[in-house]
Image (tube, rainbow, N blue to C red; front, side, top):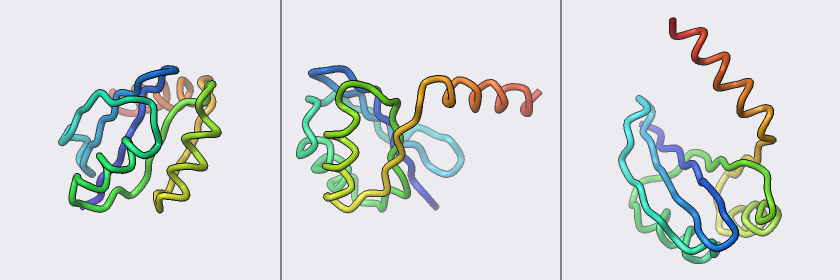
Length: 94
């Protein structure tokens, strides 16, 4: 089963959420907005993370390149693309 991580990023903090392939939340954690702390948390999760996603913002470049260097597959998304994708998902489920 695959596991996916989403980051809600602020300047000094990050809320990390890991979901399984069924969309069930398996880990939620508030962390400092530091690549090393995020990578350590994900590595200690003990199961492979398929992909990490977060919205573009001030810390995007630092997180993208740092998490890539730590061995993760990372996706940085524009807010309008995230909104459009979520909107499409909501329509599809109805």
